[in-house]
Image 1 (tube, rainbow, N blue to C red):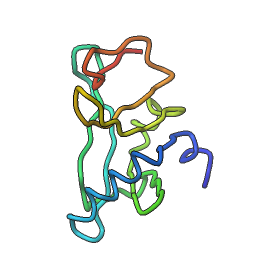
Image 2 (tube, one colour):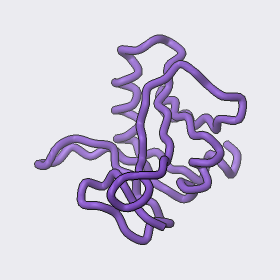
Image 3 (cartoon, rainbow, N blue to C red):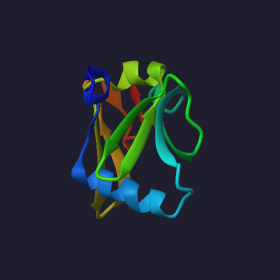
Image 4 (cartoon, helix red, strand yellow):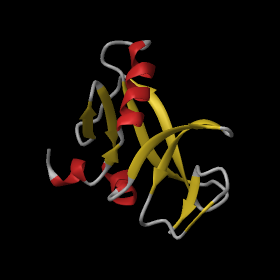
Length: 112
């Protein structure tokens, strides 16, 4: 694993949930995690199941889960931890991003 992929940590819980999601998809599918402008705090995380891979995508594999991150999003996500949480308010992926200076209540958008 190179330093780019090791800069994004995928928890065991997230890897399990991603594997469960991908089990129902086409064999070459992966979860794309990206950062886009927008959301209530300036940037927002986006999660998509896709079979399309770009030549410059960073591929993170853990316990049967495949995650794709484009190079621009990786700049915003470096050092982040992707987790899956199932609690009283619902089940969702959560990203603990050390670069975020603020985030919204729903946890899907952030500012730098």
